Image 1 (cartoon, one colour):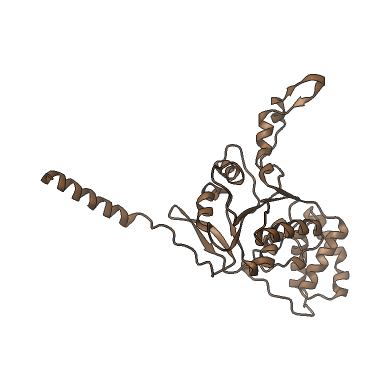
Image 2: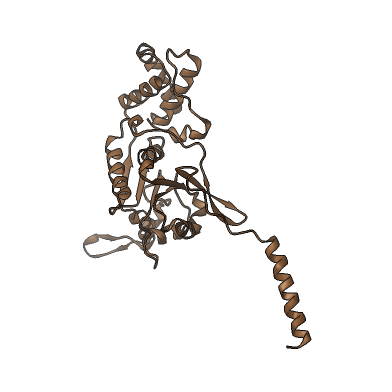
Length: 309
């Protein structure tokens, strides 16, 4: 080997050594014993799983007026934890009606049986295959949680999620499901102009255009749809009473606050579980509870973490 070539190789090795010193190290494996819930966070360009130190403590028994929705998600998750076939789930409907709270309650129900939750922001869904690779072969069962999911036209994360749900050449991981919440059934904005690409066939029937097909193609890849609906006045008052009891108010105080709870909802323009929680929190803060209520930690993500009980 010539001296010139040896010098070139030595310089290249020196350059690589300097680059390795400044490049970020590969993300370390998370401490799986640190929590039952994890957040995907981007650190130095890589997606890392960070344990959630204060996990929402909401329980299934706390959730009111969503019994059919609760039963569906409970059944699907029980199948998943038991190693039986189960579906990815899309929870859609009115805001503040308990979609994300139900997922967190299910986590608390099955955490002792090995269920774990990974919260992923919409912007990080493009790295979802790498995240699934991190948990591949683990004994736990993982729910990837995407809260308040919706997309605009042309977003890369839309295509990534679509491929992961059904369409990738790689087989779906048996220990991972995706649970997503959204106020939109089809996850994309639907416009009147989409119908202009339809074609008129025989007998006057309308064939939807490809734009419409694309709009619904993602939501159809979720095997289970769970819909939530606005609450009636009686349902709203039931939820208010539940929260006031949680904060230690007596039955007499709960009855006395019915009218104020209705006025509060009227001013907010919504009768939802989230509004009920906010009313109860306001009243409990101003009143002297007759019994000590369980403390709510900041890390419990209220009110979103407790958006409907």
